[in-house]
Image (tube, rainbow, N blue to C red):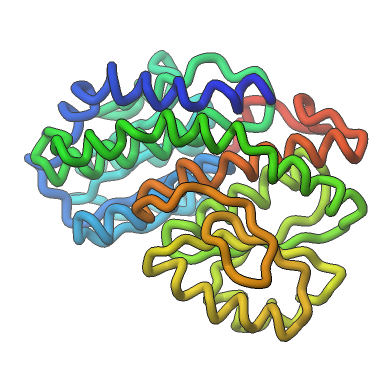
Length: 340
């Protein structure tokens, strides 16, 4: 897991340097079709990448987007009319049968289909009309790290290339080109690792964020659950205030992903309410007075998920080791989970 985490700056560089053209071709095909809505389908970690892409799609492209429930098709036999839609299956392995079945049904109903995987020879890639290879290379650990951030970057490049009618704008490319070095700097900071003893005996933990940061909060909770076996509860900042806030107290740690953009600004109220509950809060991103902070670079909110998750991955790794667990082989889990 440590090796996979450290490879992420290189994965960013690989995608930007060698795959922008291929992603642009997919973007051009989508732009020509002019989909009226976009449906993402995924499981686990990839579901969080898909959620990030749904935010991008609605905010940057102005196209309604949502996440499909594969079981509606695979368990209940539903055959929704997906004509005029773009249906995107996101899966690191491309081997989950239910995601492939959603794309097959969508294609039969007239949808344009796209697979985003780390395996161009996978069944999911074969089921889709279009494919994007996130090119993260072999991932050693069961817990996904570099394949997750590769999905984020590939989906970001796709959306911005659709805006450019098949070309990633030069200004966007220049800003994205800073990500590998920024990621290296984040990974060189041991602040998150040093927090591991703080959570050694925790049984529950809350993660929270809004907008582009919400998928990061969900992915962080998943990583902590699958490597350290604690109960990680992820909420959007807005949903946290609608009831779950009641569980916050000094014995339930909170990891809050807080940037300086619109989503991050709305989290200030959430932090205030958590303060009233005397919750043990750590922020990732912006330095908020009176709260312990894991710093990450102040970048456009669209880019922040590619950096904010890195210290959280390292925290999950360090916490697992602190608790005497093996983060490379979580109990009961396999690298490829085949759901029907």
